Length: 121
Image 1 (tube, rainbow, N blue to C red):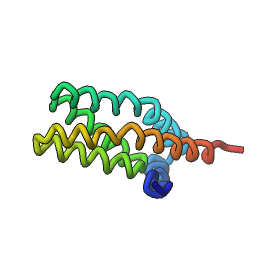
Image 2: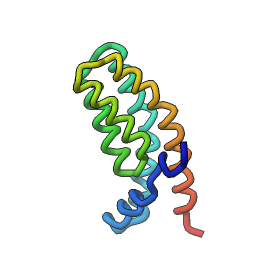
Image 3: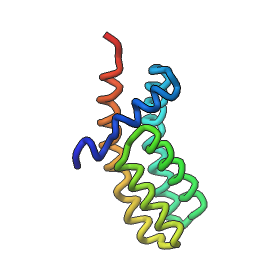
Image 4: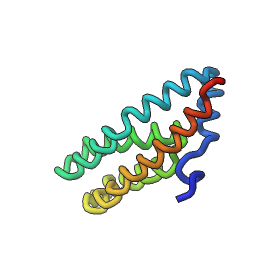
């Protein structure tokens, strides 16, 4: 998996420009990273018990926040899980969701690089 497929730095630049505040963008990325593991686990847990409402809520949250920070791979996987849940194919959704944690790990590594690069000095 290439770094470009994991993270789109242009999305982070758009976020920074849109809010006209680099500190906010950095804070948003830090908050995203701090919530990422729990978001992924919520999806996996909900699918494991067939709770499609919770799974859908969690996957939409992950998809939107991932798109905002530019974690393309993760946003794409979340989209895939969402589609499977919408089609009521929980087995396929579970299989797709099993790829979320490793993708989240790659996203965190890429975002950490962004945060290091944003530090002044």
